[in-house]
Image (cartoon, rainbow, N blue to C red; front, side, top):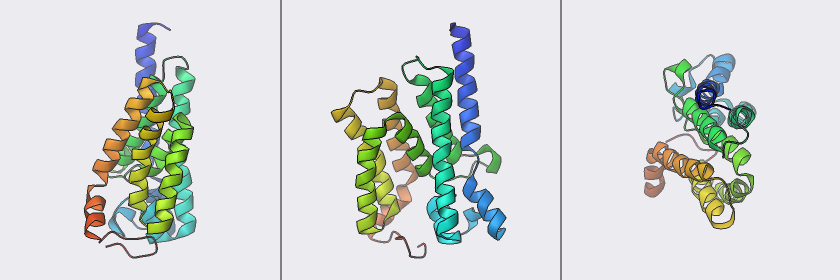
Length: 207
């Protein structure tokens, strides 16, 4: 594959993955079911957790599944277009999908925090590290009922497990670290509320 073709393929992958990530299923499903903008209810976040608060468990599971699928499809698109590139294409495709979810072009660049799409990306790229970190995250959510805490532990734990116990392409290492920084930044207000003991738990109304 020539350099020009590689560059064009990379641009195409990034654009398609971003546009795919920009599909806000929580927004669309909330509009369909309740005729409301989910970003104006609950926590104001266009994601699965706020869908649970506003619409209930069924729609929340659907949103979670679809948002995870966005990350999976984007990564496989990168693999398909450049299977032997050292992981750069699928890594950038995954990041573009997360960016699309966070800043969707179709919805005024007001999206979610990218947790579900991140799960799809990391589970596809680095399955075992993501699995181990995910188990810790699920355990913390079960014990504390703080989804935000579990999300943060997941993105911090994945690169730790990956670097400590596995050998993945450098592109994947950089991606997981960048994603961790991005998600922590997107959860700044949650972290402040966690420290203050004011964060909403599953089953509680948003504070």
